[in-house]
Image 1 (cartoon, rainbow, N blue to C red):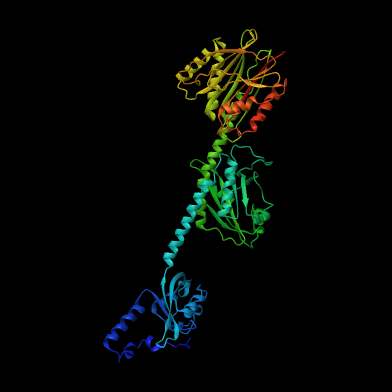
Image 2 (spheres, rainbow, N blue to C red; image 1 turned 90 degrees about the horizontal axis):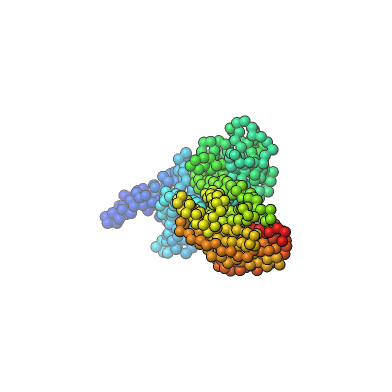
Length: 580
């Protein structure tokens, strides 16, 4: 490829006037212009021989590198700037085939304390003399440190936005608090940490802890934990989910929560841990954990808890940028957790209210046997407004009532109690069934109460051995015959209660000697995507034990309901005449 320093060094010398003494004026002007471009521009220009040693560097490159031009001549880039990153195969390939190539050069450049990380985009061109011999390379570089930094920051920003968008889709998919906490820790372990836990502040919720809270401590319950498999094995001795820990004033979790800011710390690799948390810190260090990040979980109104994350082994330590991302992630998760906590409180309140109201229907006459069931929906839906009742009336008659308030939650449970009390008062007046429903319809509509309800009344009269019915938009009752067969009792149905326009009808049907009359709410039969007539027909295909106890019959009916995908509450009321 040529000998060492084959380029005519006089062409690169400072003695321009001597060099051009015999040249034409036009050639001199061209040379001076070209030299000004090479040495006065903002690009770094260097000429290398075939062994990639510098033959010439322009002043701009000397300033960048922090090494005078004369000290670079005869040396390679690696010798001038140790540790610089540049693929050596690229200039060698240009020497071989003559095709220009681009390369990115990165490393710390500058002199003394001013050395800073910089990046350069360089292009290599092959040089040949007049005989076509390869004599070296020329490299022209432009600094791209700031544009590259901007692009890197932009890429990181896009990555953060993508991660936060994914978090919105994956955290808070249910209204269950424990599930939401687990979704959060599983997500951060996948994208941000090697291990994570959610610690919730214990307020009024009961906890399983043998210790009474100490004075001046904050009690937190570990609601969820997640870790990469290798770290999980090493952390086997640490507390698991549902464990309760007391946090004193020096606890990082407590300080993070009280200050409302992320808390980043590195665990010392050699110093012996001291203080109240020395044992836990020693376990962390033994597991290879070297960096922790604690982020507060706060809503607009209160503190929920903290998200604690760790990194171990070869993972890099947490940075301030990680803390910003984690805080944004925690903010979004906090609102999902608050919704779940609020739902849990409301669901528990509504369920307890409904159970209290449905604890037992009023005792009927001694000649009537009754049994009832209430089964909340199994898909975590909010409790509904289903209710039932049985009332003993004069002349040995018994009134069975079942209804379903539209909607869910505490309001539906409260509305159910209003309907139940109103129908009890109307029943004591002695008016016919259809007039009871009409009066209830007018009273609800006139009060401005917005919760409509379906309702079915069944009045048994032992003197005539008949059952009279009046229906406000409810499903028809079932007759369970003594031989175990099941059949529907077809009835005319008026509009639900609360419309103010209800016209109802009382119809009488024969009694069920030795059989059972069953009233139920729509959760027993309704299935998503299935016609109600199909569901009712399937119910009539049941074969129940003849003469079995009412509780046994209700258990069999609920077992049938469990084979489907019930998405609403189920209320059942069964009645049978005694001594038949």
